[in-house]
Image (cartoon, rainbow, N blue to C red; front, side, top):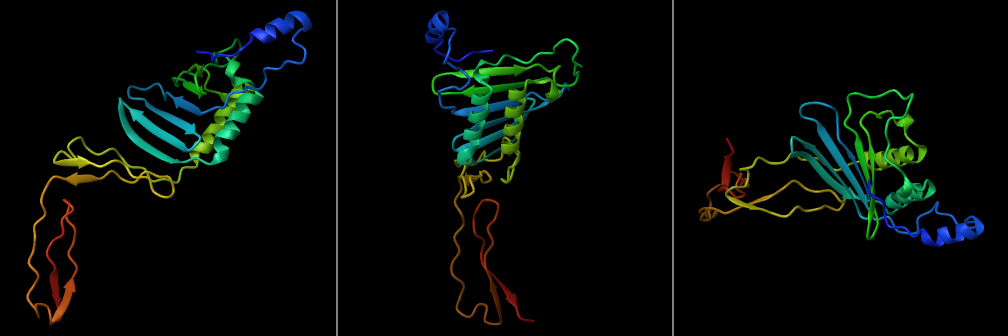
Length: 234
């Protein structure tokens, strides 16, 4: 667990004199720039872990199994998303919270690997670890439980399409173009610019399809147009 840099010296001095009367550290004064929650997944030979990061302008989600990304998306964040998380962090003073471990009398879980919560500010971050033996959120401190539940609700409302990563040789004969984000803040499917020259076709002769309908050319897998075709009126 790593703590952020906070100034306690003024409070210490004030406490020695007045018992720290009038001073409160229940609210952080730094702007929260991101909140990331990483779920390490179940205890299995090939667990699936997920990481969701909420920033001021975007929500990023990834799912990983055996070191490979099997799902990834990004969507536009609402201005209130990060502000609502910061409100929870301030309300429960979570920058001073400790890791969650199994306490005496609590029922232990045996099939979960745990969770990591990272709250970032401009020059530091605070990391909280939830032990895998404490999968029951009702056993968590109220502030951390509310923060993670809120985080899940904001991430879970994804409306972006998901794409499986392409095979390693999918674009071996071309160049993978940078991802494009549409007007909804969603990534579009990856694109490959093939390093090939498309064939050129001479215009058909006049009257070539007078007794039929010209069918517009189709685009093949290399992004090249084929020749026009004629559907005869029989």
